[in-house]
Each structure stands twice: as C-alpha cells, then as structure tokens.
Amino acid sequence: MNAWTALLLRDLRLARRVGAGAELGLVFFLILVSLLPFAIGADQRFISRIAPAFLWLSALLATLLGLDRLLQADEEEGVLDQFLLSGTPLELIVLAKALAHWLVTGLPLSLAAPLLGLMLAIEPQAMAPLALSLLIGTPALTLIGLIGAALTVSLKRGGLLLSVLVLPLTVPTLIFGATLVKEAALGRPYTTPMMLLGGMTLLMLVIAPVSAAAALRHARQ
Amino acid sequence: MAPLSTPGRVPAPALAIRGLAMARGYRTLFRDLDIDLAPGQVLQLTGPNGTGKSTLLRLIAGFLRPDAGTIRWSPLPEDATPGECLHYSGHHEGLRDGLTAHDNVATMASLLGGDPGRAEAALVEVGAGPLAELPVEVLSAGQRRRVALARLLVAPRPIWLLDEPFTALDNDGQALVRRLIATHAEAGGLVIAATHQPLDLPDIRHVSLGGQAS
Image (cartoon, rainbow over all chains, first blue to last red):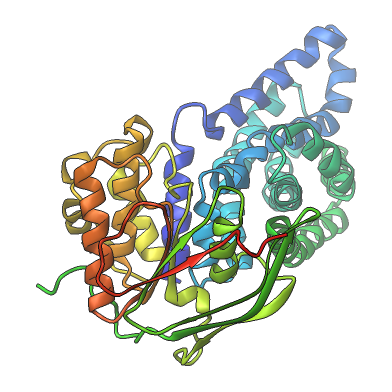
C-alpha cells in the first residue's frame, strides 16, 4: 500500500502545478454557469427551473478537463512502463490516479456548486442536495473518464475522441444526478435518485479500474 | 554503508530464451532466437537500427508478448513475477515533468519496492546531486539520463535491461554507466544492454540481431 500512497501523493503534487487542471476545472465550471444568464436573459424563474440540469451538465464538462492527460503524460514519458514493473496491480494504480483526479476536480466542484447554484437562483432547499448529488455522482464521472483515458492513451490528439467516447456513458449518472436536485428543489423526497446515483458510482468503481487496466495492457501489445 | 548498487536479497535468476519470434507489422524482426544467460553475466545486444533490439528488451521486460517462443527466468523468488525482479531503462527516462529530480526518484523508489530515503544518496552517486531540487523539465538530456540511472540504485533489483544507456551522456557519464554495469555484474546481477558502444568488460556476451531477420 506504500507504493499506492506514494503514487497518489505524486499525482496530487502534480495537480498543484499551474495549468495542470486542478483549479482550472473549477474556473471552467464558474464560467459556464455565469454564461447561462447571458444566453437566456433575465428570466429568473426559467433559469431557476433549468438550474439543476445545467449545473450537472457543467460539472460533467468540467470533469472532462484534464482527463486526456491523466494517463497519457505518464505513457509518453515512460512512467507507465515503470508502473508495470512495480508489482502493484495496474488496476490499483489507475484507481489511485482516478482518486487523485477526483480530489482535485470533483471534490472542489461539489463544494463550490451551492454557491454557483445561488447565482442561478436555485431553490434554497436544493442547495445541500446539489452538493450531495455531485459528491456522490462525480466519482462515477471520473471513473468513466478513466476508461476513456486508457482507451485513447496512445493517440496524440485523443482529447476529442475521449469526450465522444465518454459522454454517452455518463447519461445514467446525469439523469439521476439532475433528477435528485430537481426533486429536492420541488420539496419532494429524493432518496430514490440518490440510491441510483450511488449505485452508478459503486458500479463504476468495480468496472472502471479493471477496464482501464485491460485497455492499457492491450495498448502496449 | 553498503554500495548502493548491490542487488537486493533476491538472487539473480538465470535467463533462458527459446525459439523466440516477433513480428512488428508484417515484418519479422527475429525468429528462432535462443539466448542463455547466467547470473553475473552481461549481454550486449547489437544490430543495425530497426532489427528489434528495443523490441527484444521490451519482450524480456514482459511489456510485449512474443509471437512464438518462451522467456523463462529460474529460479524466481516465490510470489514474484519477473517484472518485480527487473529494471527497465528505455528511450524515455520515466521521469515526470513538474516534479523535482529527487521527488521523481523517491516516488519510483516507493513504487518499485525500494527505499525512498536513499534517493538523495543515489543522485549523488550518479553525479546528479546538485540537481536534486530542480524540476526535471529544466535538465539537459544528459542530466535527465543521470537522474534516470539513479532509479537503478534506489530499488535494488537483480536484472537490468538497458536500452541505449549511453545516449546523451558525456564521457564521464559513460564511464559511470560502465562502472555501474560492472559493479552490478560482479555482485551477481544480470545485465542486458542494447548499445553499440564498447562496454569494456572482460567476459561479456554478444548477441547480434539482424543477421537472421528476413
């Protein structure tokens, strides 16, 4: 487990660099959300109604940032070769990388979301559920992205292909996440979408590391 | 303090390659390749460009699966895969930009089962001591090579696979590589190096690729 922690800390340290994506994801999220009123106009009730869906969509797009370099930078510099010699299963290694990515994108996104919800006149009772839904749901987005990152690891300009591959797979997470916030805004119970959202994340926690590791191994042959 | 380059408690296994064949695209790089190597031996791989020296090293490292033939190490320590007993140093140094030389080497030490505390000493041993706190992207190609060599020393492993270890190194650095290889072999380690530079070792084995490729 020592190797695993070392890798996690390394990726966190790398993410702190300027332009590495950590704070950029948050800024991107903020910009997307502040653009919406410009496009729609001063119809506050309409904005408030679409806010849950739009916040979730923005979070989804912000999570995609930096995913294309998640594994590619290590592959290009020969670090992935060293991972394969480490004796730590590749599945655990990619999981450490996904966790680091989530800690610097998904987590700050979730915590900042209520504040941005305020900008979109979201119902006060939906603030906490919004943060909760993103906390539960964004790990699934990162994990799905991990599979895409592994599949496009050897492509020089894989970023666009990665988005095309990954976005359709995020549909269930998006549905349950946005539904949770919508229900909360209407003052209705939201246990069901929360359970399903958590289920998606747990499912991806099992599937993604295995698929990503398999894709990486295959890419080397 | 014991010299850094002594292999770990793991004794070097012997290598037996039988009937190895590999094609890349539609071109057969080599076939029916047999190599035997005992602990303490150094093998120098030569051959014109594009004859499969790097591919052979990557096969031995286990990154690629051969089209035919077997690569066997014996005896391997229990529960260990061949990958856990070997170092691979290829064209890419395995250094991650954005981290200092020291952090790169220390992370690799933890990852490869070595001691991160020895990163400092290892960097000094390869003549990169003053570079320890610099981010690796500001280093020259030769300096990066030296930092990459430190990896061989922080995590003692009995088998070294070196692809063009002399690239970009100055005379001093080349002498260092020769010394590291010699010390490793003397201590019972096993080295396979793909290079055309003389290694200046008394009982070195040679395998030349390209003769049998079609």
